[in-house]
Length: 428
Image 1: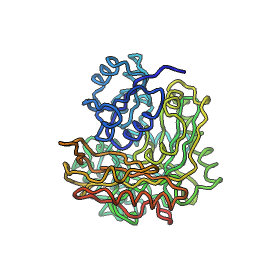
Image 2: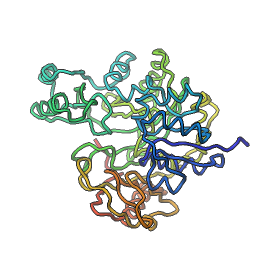
Image 3: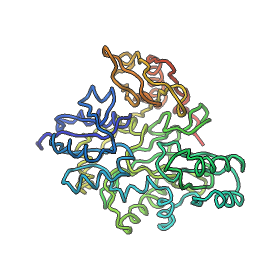
């Protein structure tokens, strides 16, 4: 039996709560720390009042507490090079280096990478000048997708239906600073039609393993309408299966070329690569890359994983992914996100949450995202996406019904959630 260890999870959302929950089940995990954590992670271990980009503070804490493995949740921490700093200090950490994580924190870098290695994606242009961007748009057909180049917490994407909307979005980003530094450079892309799906792949530098497919619901409104969010719910597997032909194409046209491209470019990627794909009539195409576990996708993937998560993460860090065989619960999982009224725009916080204990059950897990402990044992809202209610079922319909039944037991002022997550009809 290998020795037990303490684990530090960086982040404070639903992804981090699901990671903390899964790692807390490991017989080898002595204690789980989360920085900064939320009200849910506080029930599983200890929250640490450190920011996700406080690299030196986090490193000092990891050394002082004898942390055996640090797991990076958010993209911002990767972008400031926390993995490089921990590795230089001899600390074991799960996540890619800053250079490898460019696949997420720079969309222009990613587009160049995809083009250089012949990986299918939307045609696009990259711009820092308004006039140049507008000239490019004038030669395209609509709709067009306008993206902030940098990290914008899942909100830096606008679908412009006509030239007026495109110009407004371009000016808001480049002149108005709508997304701050993330929007100083933008991408203008063709609008891909098809069905979206989210893949998670563990990479150990030399090989990869795909995790089960999940389907996210990005728009705030039912029927996939309204503003883009960080995700309003997920299903794994999706209501419409990929099929063997599409799965083969994903391996041969996307994942294998990505791995070869990373190695050719001298980027040793150890961590979780999360491609967002559009399944078009011409085949799968890459919409974007994330260089960490997705949120809320992780909230339906980890409950289906039967393995102890700790040795899986260790194998990725140590380059031993070939030693691991993943075992999956065949039952589908559905996650419904409960959000604050106004999200993804302005919203109130500090609202008491009721019904958390009543919602949980044998096949229902309530993951905290935007929550904090309150007085007298209360749990308060502290973010836009507040909770993720995940349920397993013998069928997708059963998992969906169970998730919505549990969600209905939870109340807080301004609570909003979509009623069509994992509906039978596909998105797209």
